Image (cartoon, rainbow, N blue to C red; front, side, top):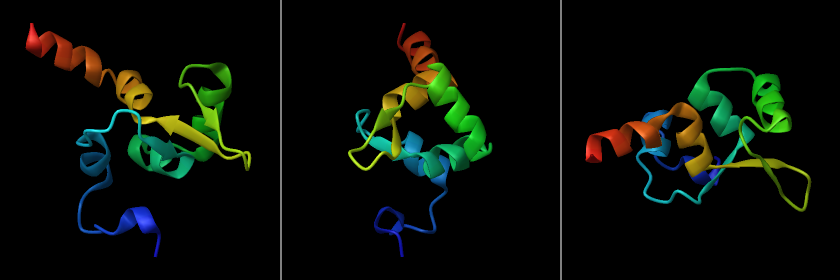
Length: 83
């Protein structure tokens, strides 16, 4: 079992987007499941700069939760609600 998936019953988008840690790094697989797109699409977004990516020492791609939220437009929606 994957260590980050201890709460299998909870919906992935709810679990990820409800997180209070905006600096948390998501795997490419988590991003593909969140957006319901292929891994190639997420890779293209990362390489194009549309969704900033970070590389681990092992060469794996990671995506910051705050960047994913901004890409989804959630941060702008929250700012509008706070105004």
